[in-house]
Amino acid sequence: MKKKAMLLLCGLGLLAAAPANADQARDAILKDYATAAGVTSFSAEAGKTLFQANHTGGKPDTPSCTTCHTTDPRQPGKSRVGKPIEPMAVSANPSRFTDATKVEKWFRRNCTSVLGRECTAEEKGNIIAYLSSL
Image (cartoon, rainbow, N blue to C red; front, side):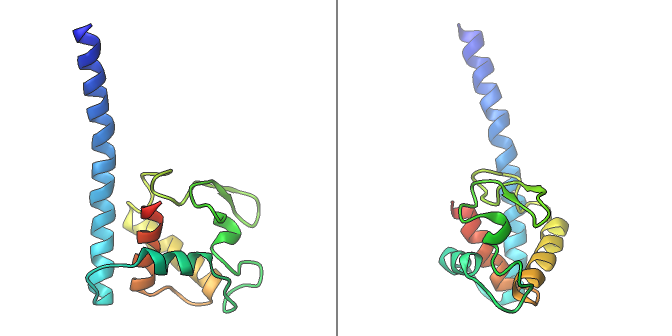
């Protein structure tokens, strides 16, 4: 019985290590955005508002982040052509926002589509704060 308990604890330790590394990568991305924005923290509420709002500056078929990512970011979404999108919420997808290159690529593409411009560093940080709070 002790062997099973020890194996279970070791397995849980390995599982816990992955999110910790993901958190460090996400924290580094947030720190870079904070430096660029000249802020010390981000607002999950402002991120939620931006994520859920309908905007008029971008493409008419993508007026909101929720158009593709759904109103519940813990659920999978679909692109305009029907391609599945993994959940945006960190609680449902712990590897979300851990690769700075991918984060920038998708913010650039999606902000331009929804807002008609790139998101500011503060907006990006607020969105990540919101999606990390779920």
